[in-house]
Length: 492
Ligand SMILES: Cc1cc2nc3c(=O)[nH]c(=O)nc-3n(C[C@H](O)[C@H](O)[C@H](O)COP(=O)(O)OP(=O)(O)OC[C@H]3O[C@@H](n4cnc5c(N)ncnc54)[C@H](O)[C@@H]3O)c2cc1C
Image 1 (cartoon, rainbow, N blue to C red):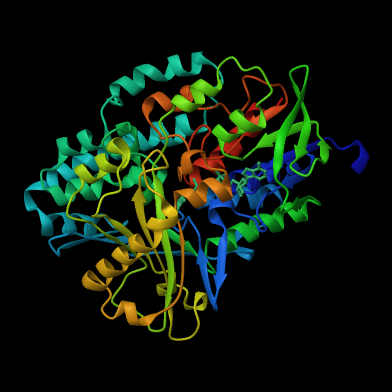
Image 2: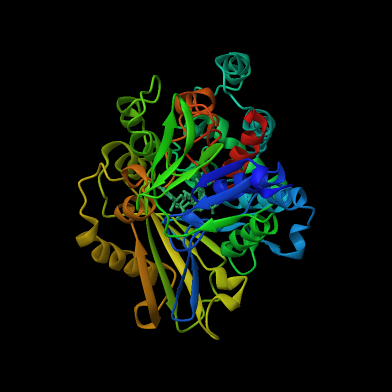
């Protein structure tokens, strides 16, 4: 097509949602410009390279490969030519405070044996839980996750089934109905934290994640999640489109209720036939659309939403390998429910924590120099409503994590660290313009999901669309890739 006659789309942000949206628009014949405020793509999946180590900043667990494969197919290519996904077994090891552990995998027999090892009387309840998880997967992920929810009729149609599935119950309450052992209750309920939700509050529809992992497996992209980002970038470029870095959008230009383009922080204006925002949804409404009268998503409404937790992540490299550690380990702290309340409700930074420890070099040693290991240790923390000065707290908090890892999992750790870097909610707010420094946008509560979440087509402005964690269906790589797929459905 003649480039001058091609409609032009601007995509704000190069997170997975933005890249997937750009590819889908490119496949529809749009000329696409992606504007990214950072110096590299990926957003939460940015890659930090330091002292010969490579650290994926955020997502590490790849669960639904076909959502990526579809994007390659749209470009007439095969994903496996560009990216290798390695299936993990076990998916992850959960280490409890009493020293016992549980290995989570996709093998039904192994899982039954693990449940029986910890709590023989819970095997039957576990089987019933898995059936409930599967039912919610088919409805929650396969049906609701692909529905646009741009009108309330869609929501009305979903309500009877949601009521039947007892989606008014929390994940925690649902799990407690099936198993008695506290450790198993933790194993089966902690998944909503992957997408920023409090297991004590978010709808039990999210127990679907257990079945989703079993159905699709848990994978690691060789070369790191950054290899997926680069792969998608390659697709964008193969369509003749491009990304501009260090380009912060200051506002979305709106004339007579139609998005006409964007203005950058340096004053430059870029016109477009269509604008897609992959920037933080609260930031988009409150800042990028600050001058636009809004009926539903007013500043007050945006401010009154419940936001997901923040995360503290310590990236570090060691001059030796810790081959006793799996690729993914979750080291539980002494408290579970009370810690969740500190993070989500009381919004205080507790002295204790649970840590998700990522060791990518267990699967791909090329991410660190020879004989070394790369790690990240993630601790869920309250978002910026908490009274925490992260500039002063970051180092003592990191040291506390180091001490706990050294004591429980990694002997000699303090003497083997050769490189180190941290991120925290203040950094999320400043770098990524994340509202309240929340790591996953608005919390996936029932009252903030489906029709109640930001639609993928703006209700306020024509020619304006949204993708990414803050929009329907929600956070996580599968969620944001699905948001771009729904964009394809709602585009006129
Ligand atoms: C530490 C961590 C671990 C995670 N682990 C997993 C996991 O293992 N598996 C999983 O599936 N998910 C995981 N997630 C969730 C997943 O990473 C996110 O939900 C997803 O990557 C968010 O993608 P997004 O499309 O919303 O864009 P984002 O990644 O949020 O990117 C948005 C982009 O927009 C840019 N931007 C913002 N404002 C502007 C502006 N005004 N102008 C220009 N650019 C702008 C930002 O710089 C950023 O690059 C994790 C998240 C975190 C934080």
